[in-house]
Image (cartoon, rainbow, N blue to C red; front, side, top):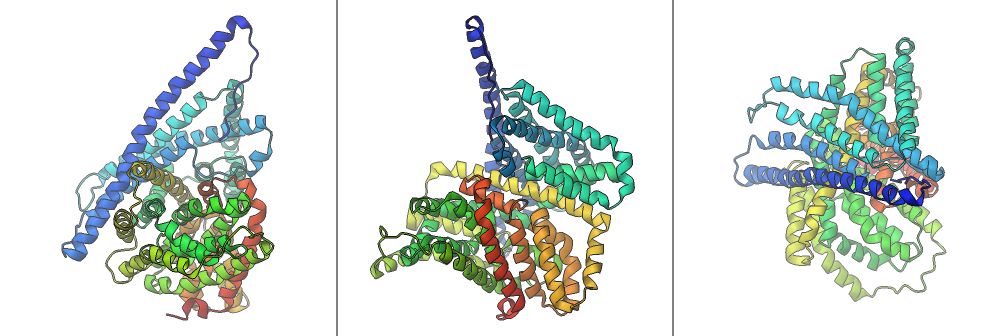
Length: 632
């Protein structure tokens, strides 16, 4: 984030005082923030390790010792909510909550600094508004006792008000360190005035009915996102305003929906797969896979771009999180690609496109979610998801060929057969990991959540014994980064789940399902409208909340019009992936930019070609059901 320093004229007599006091104040505040940051980051890192130990112990106890730990999932769920909230606080302190800065970046330095402070004030406003409902929710949970551990559920729910308070403290410290008091006052007054205007307009809003969905879920979200407010807080402000000003719903219910969205046990695979992605990068496993692919294709025009597409396909079989996939591949490939003349904007655009391309590659979190909410066989989804990813890889590669057909590779030497064979031998332990993970899930050794721990243990052993590149000093930063990235993702999912619940209560989802049932043209029209709807939903709601909301409604309709449920699952996942990774609303695009350390504005133009290639691949998958169900 940009920081604007105050520029004032001083006389020599007061120059020393003016120069000494602000730095001292900022240094004291910086020390306080650093100390508070450590108090949050260290427990967050410990929670990541604890989750790995608990879930792996559950696998060993059940599959090896045949004596299941009945409390393991419950304890993991309790700690997971704490991990999500502490991770969100770490992300807030580091300024790593996903945000759209394309428009803000085009403004001048003064407006940039003003909008940056406005974004912090808006986030702080949401945190203050949600703090009391979060406390009330935690108090209400005190009357519930957990079934296995027999402890009050407040131990779990307290994570919500504690995490909210920590983020609010970091927001206050950031504002206190702002150099320009005038800018700070203007930003605070702006946010307060906008909230006040909506509050005064409450009598006018309630009679509008579902038009409020457009006002809050489109208007407020769009305004906040384009103003640079972090995506999760933009969603939070929208759903909070909608419920507080247009309904009589207790706001504690919103906190409950956020809790449900952030702490669903299946999402525990997000931080674990993120950590696994960082592990395979640190141990050299990702580098070995990429080196093998590069030895095959590095001499071809656009070769490393093909390697990026292929590596994302392979790594998606190791991870289940798109953020983890991108985090494993980008640091390995981007430096060499930039040396060959590739532009940062094009690299991050292709990285985001491959994120959408690989949404159907098992063990995708979206596949697991669809299976859990619709009853479709997860094994069938895992089998059906492989070929659609190949089709989209081909369409992306076609565009890569066109864009890089004139690339100068005179300085690049073609790898010899012996070098390719050596690279293959080195990469074999890493290439085996996707098959180990798939085997563990299909054979019932571990659940889709637990399998990530098997991957982590495998990566630790391979890194220590075979590749011998395990760097212990990087372990703590990796654990903190895992908590940070996971917290940013889970916070968005939590607020998006609140939005999804608001849509359900408004009757919008039922109206959508009813209108799609009566479409003329049968299955073709139903699929076409589903593609359009899920591209939009993917960009607004994020994948998993959209599936939770609309999956149970639309899958029965798909069966009625004769669309195979696995085929339909592939279509909507790919459509949702396109929406998720397409700017300006797709949060996956900002995750790719954050991982690639590229300003989102740089990738806006090149990504549209890749999105078109993905859309062509999606249409091919939709027209030919065999691609999805041919191997079932």
